[in-house]
Length: 245
Image 1: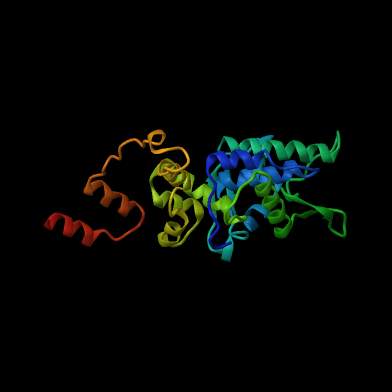
Image 2: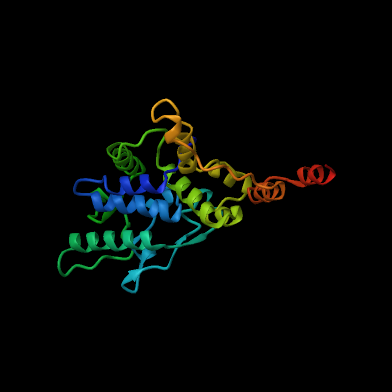
């Protein structure tokens, strides 16, 4: 969904605690995998048990096969972090419980199954609409506001990865973008930092004396040029003007 915003860590925690009902584990795992490996909603819903559960434990990397990637462009692999591994363990325990004491979960079973089954009785994949409805209900219960949607998971992954690496090309690779300009649009601003800055600007509610911000450290021109370059901007002219001053 265009224009959706990313979530900060506190919001991710709040949403993860807001899933309810029979399918809460499934829905929570979908959300946590989404913010951990940055998949599009259809890519996530196309995953099968065997894609994430191998040799009795979570896979180290999640491979998005070419067949499920948007436009069938290219495959990509994303390492699975601790949150993602916990999500996989939770949903596999849920699958195992549903299969019964002596049941086995077929590796070809959709990871995120629907409430309904196929005509032959096999599990049906969760629909995009069902995934969106489950996530939006959790966003609302967590008290979140602003433009949110399934793509908020992917944008959260991108923003947090960039904050950790400061490397836009790493983010581009993990998102599977052909053009770094597309990745630029995902990053925008860090909403957590913006919220903190705006709170520090408050003067009427808390009073100026209670809201003294830490003095701002002015970045050097060289560091600003380097940051622009990391974000994919053409800084040739900027650097030339800087050197001519």
